[in-house]
Image (cartoon, chains in turn red, yellow):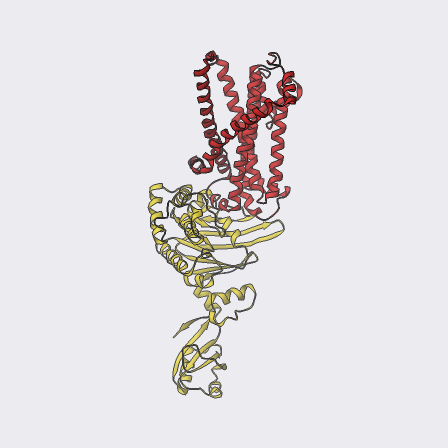
Length: 301
Length: 320
């Protein structure tokens, strides 16, 4: 535990102190706002866009899109994009250690599982800091709007106990999904130091994530279908679909709990496996990874 | 008391046998040189000791504890291929590695200060690793290896990347560590350095341990009957051969910086050097007399290729 804390602290502080982190934290929202404004102006005068916009319903159909589904879908999308950004960061961290051979020194005193978990958590904390910064900016913007336009704030949402239950589901699915996919990204970084091979493995994970995202879109309207129910238990799709189904009330609580247990158990196995891979992969330097190597890694300590 | 005990180590990489029943022990306070050509199995042994690899058979005990993360905490291991975090500051890096090995931060800070002074790095602690020269990065790597004050220090090619001045600094440091009671295993191709610093060597080739023991004992085992002699006046070779003490006498170019006549003598088995000295002194004044002992390089080449070294300058001598 002491080592885990130490590595998390070290990794987190090193990244959070870097100029690149703060530049991206500040510049990314500015770029998004700038793009929004530019595209807004461009699309305002675009005839084809206006024609499409006219056909769109002005208000969502309450039967089709409940608040639960909307929040679930939003969280699923957030998780997908969060993983794409921060998963790549985990991948790069592991790959760097493999390339510069630090892993040979670290592995003498830290077990692979601790190392992987520490990397995933430290990157997660880094993401949290960025989200807090961005969230604060959004909050400031909302307060600004409120002071100018004096719109009503639905405070009653805070007195509803379901808000807290939904928040719990969101956090559990988000963290579980992040650990699961984070460990897969870490495993990809450890497998090989060749850029083209790494890219191939990354593409596979990206496709899984995109698949999860699109299945999540399908589950918004078909949460009670057999396919969506099955995906609720598959750990690679459950972070998105589970969130949507849990919040929209499609899944009973026992299904949600079972789905979360399966998700965390798989995440644990994946962290253990990527830890073994991290320790064993130093032998693969310069050598092409083969599926046969997997057996060696699993057998290793 | 043995700090490291390796017994019957076997390791395969696919169908290649990297280690073939290697047994080796290193006593506390010893400086042991691990020698062998590239691909001999040295790194595999070091990785198994450090719990980075699992052997197929055999056992490794470090201070009586089987190779494990716990046992590794008492080892300072510097692999051949170095690894540091480029963006981290020097002192953060050293303290981080020390703490991962279980060191106390306050104590680590003190030890780090001492080593920084030895390696002339005082005042560089706040700099990032990427801002340092390759030699200074190497120094940081060594400090990070030693900062938790391990009982067993394993250095794989520690001299690579060092200029002669820093090489000498490192040699002094190793001697100091040894005086304080640390056991050191040096894996290197730098034969003169190994010969100078190590009390014992282990020679490995094709995954097999060929020889292990005290350097002086090994040299004694490989001594030849060859003597080198310099006299003020020229000797009569037929007369020397008549003494029935010698098998062969040849004139050789005199040693640089020394006047006189130089000879290479092969003595007959069982003949004492003093008898030969007496026989020669009758003919002329002896300026220099020495028995030629094989250098570590010769012994290494002899074991690994079956060929003794052709570099005469590499021979070491015991003078009388």
